[in-house]
Length: 165
Length: 375
Ligand SMILES: [Zn+2]
Ligand SMILES: [Zn+2]
Image (tube, rainbow over all chains, first blue to last red; front, side, top):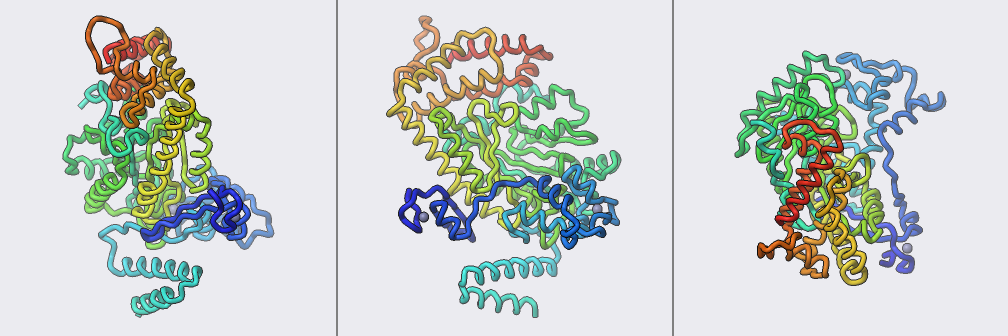
């Protein structure tokens, strides 16, 4: 199969993406893929990521300062060092306590995604449900702006304003 | 209910039926859930684990699943029983080898299991034969809703369902499809499948084998990312793109074998028939490896109308030239039974007591010889 951009080289990179039910396929050669900013990620394990972050040099203090290293969860007593050993958290609240470092890990582990999409427990209070809807709309807005679909972006912004007020 | 009630036969999802059954063995959907107001398991004392176990067991046992439900206390079960549950995909190896109070709830027809106190408080799964992810998802969703009526799940607006390991959070869903890819292996193209999976950030592992090596050419492909992509989008991607594409690759490889590498194909099938039909000692790995070739031969006959000399012998004649006028040959049902029933724990559980490896190999060879001889 030929690359669909240069129509010259053999396509060696095949991407299939399904967003909101629409299937989008791309077949590119390595050069064009690089031009398009598509890099083939190799899967990095959460433990490798964590090790590299914990081994961060003093200059990286912004990411993981002394205060983060010494932090422990007030509910379960969990520390980052324990996470480093097992790769497992101590309690649901740890996601808030250690958000600064976990958010970096989570983004890397989930293909750059940072916000939940999908099922929500039916018991969820109405207020939390609209909070979830807002998070999803903002994510869609970001995507619309990125793909320069300004018409869609404007509609999304209206919807967000409506809910916020 | 005893394990020997189910160990004598294969389960529904291994029956070789369902959409794309010549390549897709089964579909599975698993959800990871945790109870709000409890610590994750690594920080729980034994008594906290027991409390979680009791709470979830009391919620799960009365579920209306249209089937009998039974419970097995995994921490108290003998090693052989645990190995059997792992071979059967009813629990994970992690659960079998874990520590502390833990259990599994199983529907007798084995389409549903719920592991309690594995890595998360609750891991529920639904399994079906062939490519049936949407059907798995629908049933899974109903069961999850029914459980959620009785308990509060740990959930955050931003991160969705919260799990002990950050790699599972969000939907907490793991979509897995079990595939049989002997022709890709035989034509040296299995790397293509691995590379495609890696590029799409999907995890691949061999099944039934020890370590990463796939015994019997069975592979499982699963999603890895669980945050920021909905259950429906993941399932649609598997069902409409990934799995049909892989099935096409495998079928193209089978066509290639039939058109250009007939001698290679017939050699593999004939050797498999000869060895399985005559061996008196056979290891589990060797049996899986050889049965895989027979399974492919029969499926090529049934789905592609293939009729090479070796396939004809496999599918239309009995192995033994006795005077019974059997015309059926070896059926796919027989092969599937042999795959599962000759696994080490199955063998020993059905025999009634533990056997050392040599005696297992003798018993395995005997079962295979007699089943193949009778079709
Ligand atoms: Zn190109
Ligand atoms: Zn905690």
